[in-house]
Amino acid sequence: MPATYGAMSRIADCWPPCEKRLGLRILNSTSYAKVTRNWSWSLPTAAALLLLVAFSHVVDGNAPWMLGIAAVLLVGTVFAAVHHAEVIAHRVGQPFGSILLAIAVTVIEVALIVSIMLSSAEYGSGVARDTVFASMMIALNGVVGLCLLAGGLRYHEQDFQVRGASGAFGVIGTLATLALILPNYTLAAPGPLYAPAQLVFVTTVSLALYGLFLFVQSIRHRDHFLDSGEGSEADQEYTLPGNYATILSAFLLVVTLGCVVLLAELLSSAVKVGVAVAGLPPAFIGVVIATLVLLPEGLSAFRAARANKLQTSLNLALGSALASIGLTIPSVSALSLLLGTPVALGLEAEHIVLLVLTLFAGTLTLATGRTTVLQGGVHLVIFGAFLTIEAVP
Image (cartoon, rainbow, N blue to C red; front, side, top):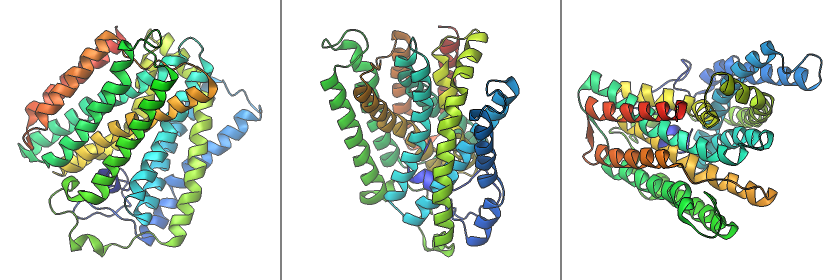
């Protein structure tokens, strides 16, 4: 997803035109121009043209070939949106850069969730819960497990800062319990629902705690979240994006986010049909949405682990989970209160077991500041159990 200093350290880790040193990647004017001549503007442009054709009814927007192209462009447009948000984030600096990244990725996730909520009366109330839970399982087990395994195989042992990682994990555990477990045990509303007053409280404290974490990470204790060697004078050799690059990225960010929202609306019915045809339960839609949102972050985290920058990997993975629960839940809850539609937040019993197991294993993993392939294997096993339960409840 998107909201940590780790995210700031990899403007486009998946794309060659970016330069790097000591884990910090800042685009200069030449490399930025090279990027903007290619994928970061061409994919959103293609998406806008496709949407124009689809919504003007020149061709059937539900034709299989149209939906296939739309799905490919949706993935590419998500990458482009994250890229342009990061360019602006580098320009404005901390903590505003982290906040901007979080907002951009949250818009993407909420757009995908709302498109399903509005198009599915029988399942819409649970899609936010399923998506956030899937995001946590993918980030905390899939991404973390893969990074620890890849880094452990290459370097045997890797180091990270316990203070930063454990602080982020503590916030994740607290918000996950309040948002996804506690609703099952309240009495004011039947089922896995919060009463409006309770929903307001959870929304408020989620935003407040997330904001406090950003303050600690970006200002008060920024050094707790840095890989060894980051923040040195050598990092300053690269120039920040100029005014032209920043303005262009701001414009393209608005365009790409708009394309993501409209593509999500176009594909919402197709996603539900595809999941049903595959014989998967409706809750698997949350896995599809979470995978799409976390794809840029996951690839960057994996590359950082392979470069022996485990702290950056953990920043990305933990930051993705934290942004998903700290911003997406409040956003969906606010929409629920405004529209008067219920939103089911409480997890099923088997999902609570997996969440508790994840928090327990994560606490042990982050306790020592050193990891091996063993911790990676443990998290990947939990991730495999999650996928199995999601596909075969």
